Structures are given as C-alpha cells and as structure tokens.
Image (cartoon, rainbow, N blue to C red; front, side, top):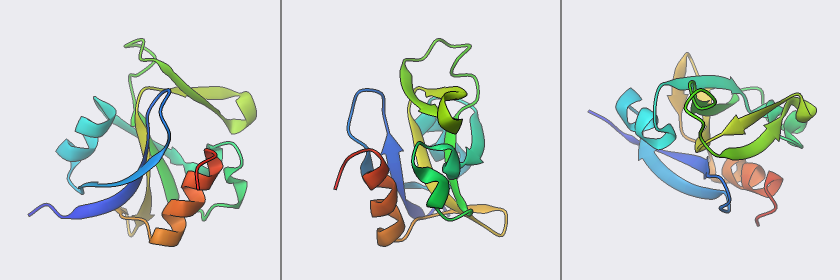
Length: 112
C-alpha cells in the first residue's frame, strides 16, 4: 500500500512548494513526467550544507524530451529541466522530509 511522503516540488517558472506525494515509483514518475534520476540535493545552488541524505529526483530523459529549463546545479556545471522534487533517502528507500528539512530546501529557492 502506497503511503504519502512530504517533498518539495520545484517546477519551472513557479515557486518551490511543499506537498505530499505517494512513495511508490509510479507516483514519483508522475511528478517528474517520466523515468526518474536521483542526484544529491547538495547539487542545488546553496545546497552544500544540506544533509547528505537529501536527494533531488528529476526526469532522467528531460533534456532529450526538451523539457523547459528549471535551474542550474553543481555551481552551473549542469542544469535541471522539467519538474523535480527533493525527498530523503533512508536505507535505500525514498522517504519524506521533516518540516524543518522541507523549509530548508524551500529557502534555497527564495521562499519562506
């Protein structure tokens, strides 16, 4: 049975927002619009101080599918396209963020 997890969703040209999504692969793929790719959330500008267990989940084929530009990562060395989200990795599973973690991520995108 799928459970809900708290994530921060970042869509192109929209403010980052805290929401709940299902913890199943299908739900996560629905958010990003395709196959998922996972990288460290520390790649987000200003994210170097985020916990190492926070992850950025994005569309693996977003650039191939010509999804809209979202934001730069890795100090401008690469960039994210399309909708993505941040959650936490625990024991090789994707789990929800605490309220504090979610607000830390939101803060990186200029929202309070």
